Structure formats: C-alpha cells, structure tokens
Image (cartoon, rainbow, N blue to C red; front, side, top):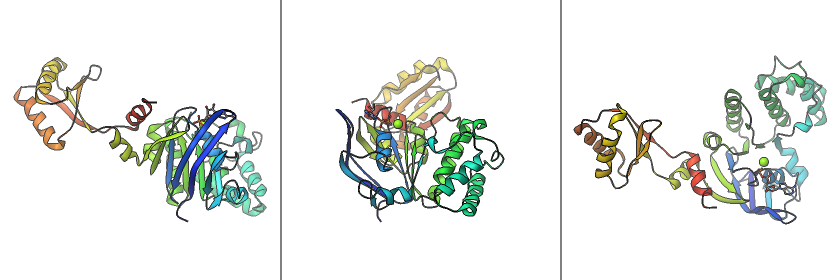
Amino acid sequence: MEFAIETENLSKSYKTHQALRRIDLAVRPGTVLGLLGPNGAGKTTAVRILATLLEPTGGRAMVAGYDVAREPREVRRRIGLAGQYAAVDELLTGRENLILLGTLLHLGRRQAKERAEVLLERFALTEAADRSLKTYSGGMRRRLDLATCLIAEPSVLFLDEPTTGLDPTSRNQLWQTVRELVGEGVTVLLTTQYLEEADSLADQVAVIAAGQVIAEGTPDQLKRKVGQERLEITLASRERINAAVALLTASSTVAPAVDEDKGTLSLQLDGGIDSIAAISAALSTAGIAVDDFAIRRPTLDDVFITLTGSL
Ligand SMILES: Nc1ncnc2c1ncn2[C@@H]1O[C@H](COP(=O)(O)OP(=O)(O)O)[C@@H](O)[C@H]1O
Ligand SMILES: [Mg+2]
C-alpha cells in the first residue's frame, strides 16, 4: 500500500454550501499530514468523511487500503478518531472506561484489562485510573480520549484539533505521544489552526481555506515559498537605530524594517552569510555597536497570512 490515506477530488456540499472542493491528499504510511486551516475551512468535514461518519458528495477516499464509501466497516476497524467524547462515561473511572470500551470492541475481559493497563501507563493516567472522569482535568481528558482511540491498535489515527484549549505542558506531552505513535508506524492526520503545531509534528502540510487546498508541501517548503530569511539586528543602544537605518538603507536594495518595541532592525537576506559579514562590517565602521544578530526564518504564521491574505 503506497498511501495510508488517499483522496481524489473529494467534495462535500451541505445543501447549498460547498464545504470541501475537490481535495486531493496522499499520506504515506507512518507519516503525519497536518491539515492546517482557519475556522470553517472544512477540516472537520474532511476528517468525518475519512472516518466514515459522513458521506462525501463527490470524489473518493481510501483509508488503510479501503474505500470509505464502499467499505466503511473495513475502514472503521483500522482507524482511531480522537475527540469523540461521546464514547466515554463521566461517572466511570478512567480504567473502567477503557475496559468497557475494550470489551465493546470484543477484546475479551482479560485482554481488555491488559490493554487498559498498558494505555493508562502510556498516558500517565495510572495514578488517576480509579478516579471518575468528572474529576479529570482538560489535559487528562484529552489523554484518556486518545487512549480510547488506541484500544484497537489502529493503523491510521485522526486527530481533529487535538490541542485546542490545552495548556503548553499538556500540549507538549500530546505532541510527544503523537511522535511516539508515528515512530511505531501509525499514520496520523491531524487538523490544526496552530501553525506551530503543524510545523512541529507534520511531515507534510496541506493548507486549507474555504474548502480548498491552497498550498501543500513540507513545513520548510511552505516557508521557502513565502519568504526569504531575514536578518534581525539588535543594537546595543536604541539611540542609534536611525543611524543604522540610514546606513543600511544606503547599502541595500530593500529598506530595513524597524521594530520599535523590540528595538530591532530586520532586513531581507539576499546574499546569505556574505551579506551578514558586509552588514556587520558597515555597522562596525560607523561605530554602531550590535548586541545580537539573529537569522529569522519565516514561520508558518507568515505562510498562512501570505497565502490566505489573497482570498
Ligand atoms: N452540518 C452542516 N450543515 C451545513 N453546513 C455545515 C455543516 N457542518 C459544517 N458546515 C459548514 O461547512 C464549513 C466547514 O466546516 P468544518 O468542516 O466544521 O470546518 P473546520 O473544522 O475547518 O472549522 C463551514 O462553513 C461550516 O459552517
Ligand atoms: Mg473543526
């Protein structure tokens, strides 16, 4: 199987509203695709179709080697979908929830128990295992939710905005877990509005807006598409900013940008290391002391703003 997830012209209309327009995706096994887009872009619609919860109105989709419309049962046996809190019971403990879901998945009581212990351990929930879900924090709920998706050891995992609303520590833990799962060969499709999240986890990113893929590639490719590296210069004394701007404006084709708050100047780097050396020499000759030179690569935020700014 070349792709764990593959779509062709995948489309979905809700009455008159076209939520997905001819989406083509191809995700290799054991990799992460980040579906990056703002609210209303069509991310959840795409995930629900791929997870067989919603029927497409056009095109087709294969998941784990099966067609989502024609072989939904085969697909369902091989996938996990996080964010389906409907599956858990607030009054039961974390352990009871996992065992119950395991038996519902026909694991058999003993195997369900074993699987629950492994997952509780993996998601650092062993200590909280005998507390009812009511007492769980947002981060713990998210971990238990992910644990429930893994009971049946899916080969393809869908995570719809998995870290929305999480604190940074919980978010980092979840990122680490996703990396581990991918290391074990699981294919992950995650949706996010966080550019940093796609950058940190995804092998490939598809930027989606208004139901269309508007750009795709590795995070690095997307960044390169948008802009070059910039050199950020922090002067030792803010009083010299104007002098530095005048000097750099005279010696470069593009005027430097000034960030008054940070007290920094930044300018596009056309000539790589050579131009850094030239700038450094020019400032030094003019007696303008520099505290710090930093090379700033475009972030996915820059990518997103540039790409969606034209829509
Ligand atoms: N059941 C529905 N009926 C009509 N329109 C819907 C329905 N679900 C979603 N939409 C619309 O489809 C678009 C995409 O929604 P969604 O897939 O939830 O986007 P995202 O997850 O990226 O925020 C939005 O404009 C949304 O309002
Ligand atoms: Mg959504």
